[in-house]
Each structure stands twice: as structure tokens, then as C-alpha cells.
Image 1 (cartoon, one colour):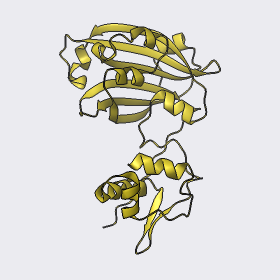
Image 2: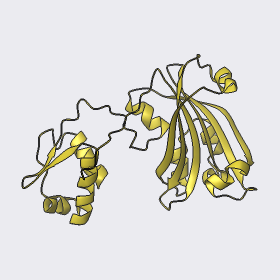
Image 3: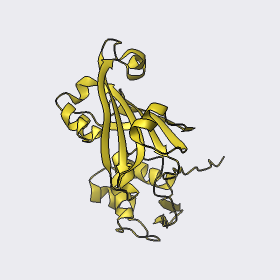
Image 4: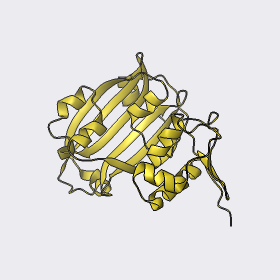
Length: 230
């Protein structure tokens, strides 16, 4: 429900300064309970899309000056690049099968289970932008291996097998690109922003470990931090 109302705000259905319909009206329009609407409104306030005025309702804030790439929203690499207006070309550097080994505990797998290590580069107009390494159980994309070698979306391959990524635990740091990757991918010598993530499905089971190296001269991430009043 949060996403539905957010999309209406961002799509101009409710422009900046507009007062949202009442909780009751929103619940009736979307066919959900008022409890669900209240939670959606709370999240919208958290992300500074609306503000609550006591006795008057909820009003849409002007977000024209906010950076669009909010780190609080989980996006695939493809969604991230397209959201910033970049075209996307995918080059698969390697796709290998190996035992889970060191990734077994992270992904809650048996050490002997087969995982796939997928190494790819995302480019725009021939310019390399992101270097990615993804590790996941081979069974999650059975039958779609050739599609992935050809640059298909990993998220879409998961969906084919009934796996939806819902959230992740992420660590962000400055990093150097591994030398072998820099040579094979053709990146110039520069700084990178590394996003290391363990991605979880809707059943709270870890399904994907990913390392995404973003060019420091092309990507900037932001997060809205709010102060809790005591």
C-alpha cells in the first residue's frame, strides 16, 4: 500500500501541497483496512513524502530538490541505472558452479550444495559503470542459465522459480576494484562505492549474496535520516 500511494504522489495524482484523502477514504479506495493505511502513511512521513498536520490531515511535500536514488529503497542494478537515466548493457565475464563452501553459512546452505558465482559488468554506451558479483543457490535459476549468460535479469530469473527478493542487509564502503576485474572489465583507475548485500526473500530466507562496485564518479547514494523526538 505504501508503494501504491507513493506512486500516486510521484505520478502527480497528489501534487506538492495537496491534502491526501482521509484514512477512511484511502482505505475504501484501495480496498484495505485503516490499519494498513496508517502504516503506509507512517512510511510516507518517514521518507519525507508527506507531513501530518494535527486536525487537518496529511499533506504532500515538495520533493523536487531531493536526490532520487534513496538508499532506503532496494533496487536491482538494472533498476538503479535506468532510474538515473542510464542505458544499460550487460556483459557476463564469468558464470561458474562451485560448492557453497564459505558462502554456506551466509546463505543457510549445506557446504556441499552447488552455488553459482555470476560476474558481470553493466555499461552505458560502452562505458563500464558497475562491476557485480552475485552468489546464489544453483537451484534458484534452474533452466535459466543461458538467459543469465546472455544478460537477463537475475531478479526475473528468481521470480520464475517463485522467489521474490523483499529486503536486504547492506554494508556500504569505499573500495578498490579487484585487479583481475579491473583488467577484464576495462575500468579506468578510480574510486568505487562497494555495496555488499545479503538479500532475503519474502519468507525471510537469504537467497542472494552480492557485491556491487559502483564508479565513484558516476554514483552517489543518499539516505534521509530523521530525529526521534523524546
